[in-house]
Image (cartoon, rainbow, N blue to C red; front, top):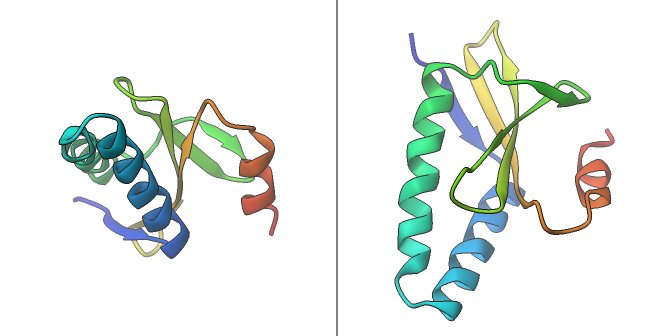
Length: 101
């Protein structure tokens, strides 16, 4: 059974910023990035049990891009909540600040 995917507003903003950045540097590359990201979200839907990195947050690195999807699983509801799509080239302190709850 597939997990339901919920994407936080901050993660949506992360994704939009990445798409815009790629399009500014190479028109059309933002669409390619988005399609690849969607394919990786489909992977999470089927099997979300990737390594826990911190505070029960799991991460899936995007192999073709310097981004990592940060998410948690609610097994009782059969849901995955995506909290962020961080650029791995940026300061990791940003991750900690968003996830310190």
